[in-house]
Amino acid sequence: MQWKARYEEWLQQLPINDPLRVQLSEVQRDKRQLEDCFYKYLEFGTGGMRGIIGPGTNRMNLYTVRKLAAGLASYIEIQGEDAKKRGVVISYDSRKFSREFAEEVAKTIGFRNVKSYVFDSLHPTPLLSFAVRHLGAFAGIMITASHNPPEYNGLKVYGEDGAQLTPNAADVIVSYMDQVDNEINIESRSLEELEAKELLVWIGDEVDKAYLNQLKEIQLSSVEEKSNLSIIFTGLHGTGTPIAKKAFDALCYQNVIYVEEQAVPDPQFTTAPTPNPEETEAFNLAIQYGYRNGAELLLATDPDADRLGIAVKKKDGKYQLLTGNQIGAILIQYILERRQKSGKLPGNGVILKTIVTTELAKAIAEKYGIETVDTLTGFKFIAENIEAINTTNERQFLFGYEESYGFLVSDFVRDKDAIQAAVLVAEAATYYRQQRRSLLDILNSLFNQHGYHKEVTRSIKLEGKDGAEKISRIMDEFRQNTPSALGSLKIRRSEDYQSGDMFDFFTSEICSLTLPKSNVLKYILEDESWICIRPSGTEPKIKFYIGVKAETIKGTEEKLTRLEEDLLNRVTI
Image 1 (cartoon, rainbow, N blue to C red):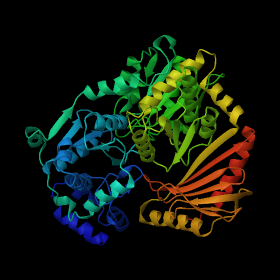
Image 2: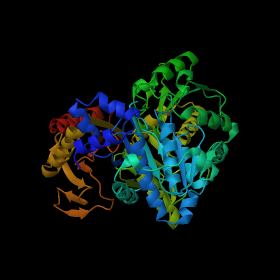
Image 3: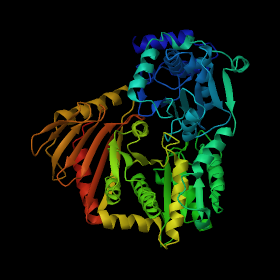
């Protein structure tokens, strides 16, 4: 069906007073915008289904939510009555329509007699992941657009292991979604009817209590070892502050100050227009609080509290933000160092990271005799590896992370968990403080031991149908015209995760890659610097990752500059 036909169908079938119909009427003369609203259906990406809120099949609204819920219900039905009774856990963040979308999922799957457990207040992504296994549910849905701008919302879908769906499972659900002829006419039940039939259960604070009990187990320091470390925490108008307060109280941190203006849920993210702890602007208020209170550590979580950013006080009194790669490296060092000193470092331990995450992690792990395993980008692949590790019992999971500020300390959650990371960062800062060292001192020590590693990510935003076509063309151009060198460095080997092939330019050898197929290209250069190119799975962007290593900070900066200039000059938009 062409986009014009979809548009006409929606306009005819939407109730006369439906706000989406009103919005369509307001833009009926803007053919370009209408086409973008209807030229395709929202797709599953790295983090599920995510898009701009508004009318149309390519937007987040009640009807596209219903369509996904119907596809999930069909998937659960074929698993049998037990799967329907185990049901789906549903959580939601502070974004516009998140509560409404959560209830719409429950109403849609409830019509098919699939039970739902819905949090009675907004809750973070890691609590959803935890709740799926804690309640023995068959699946989970998190309503969130993570760190995207305010005009976005989305859904993440989880399996019974508490991890985001792998591509194979997602494909099955998509196949059922494709069988839905008309998303506007999908039937649902009222919340009152679902409650009466015990197909809807509201979750109170019992899951929080169980989560906090598990959180206490990740500590590597005793209560007596903890000092009065001064911490500023902000949840950036999202879900992080309530559970963070409970966590820091439970773990006896007495000097945590919360950014009051950003503790209030706000779908417009009024004081943090870009609610992303990767961005310096997201820390503006926290830094002001830090100066006023003399805080040593600033912590920020994104709206669904699965990503953590930190800033550390320098000797000159100013704050330095650390990258996700640097935070993960410090946490790996702390975990392995403390476990070794306590005699609890397993010989079969394993660190999991993505292919675009710093190689410093591997160097630190090797020093302690610990294996590092790479996965594709997306925490669902780390979770998939955790499940495999636990199934065979041949290895022990110690830590998992990705460069985009996602960390997991213990696998009672199967997605990145900013609350776990926040309390362990605070513990590490306390531990090293007692040695008169800061987290920056630890980072510099790691660089001195393993070489200076530096990474950058550059994105080009290309929106709409034209943008998607441009992204596809850029990927094709790099595939068909692989450069022999970048930034004056020869390419040693190329890895094409779509074809599944690795080619060694020095030996002309071709090998098969072991990771699943994905639209990703990676180049490893002669000095072990690397470049990775991939379309974003959550935003209309193409992303370029660059990682280098040198003996000095200046050396890394020079390499990065040369590589970035050469790489981006090859991109034709």
